[in-house]
Image (cartoon, rainbow, N blue to C red; front, side):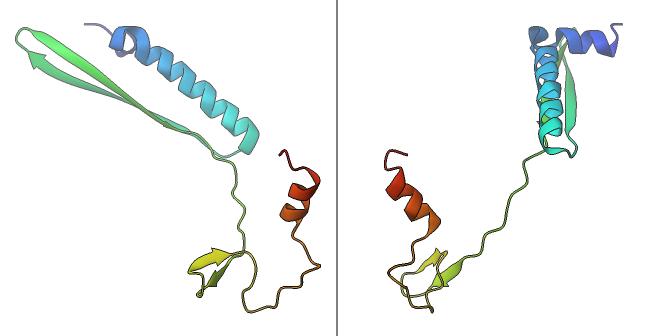
Length: 109
């Protein structure tokens, strides 16, 4: 009987092992950037077909994700949408958000 390692090496015409190596590299790269942990799950499905056995494979993996930063929003009931500006506060025409100022200075971006 072939060992489990040989089955993994030959499963999906060698693609399972190649995908595992790529997934592991992706996990390690993400861990270097963001910390955290990653995981990889390999599933082999074995079924009998006449005198032969069909061995299918499945690979799932998860990489650490960059941290997300919370942002404060207000709900503008009149407009029916979220906004970064408090709709209860009067808008001062001379005050410009940093995003608007950047667009004015760099119109091509």
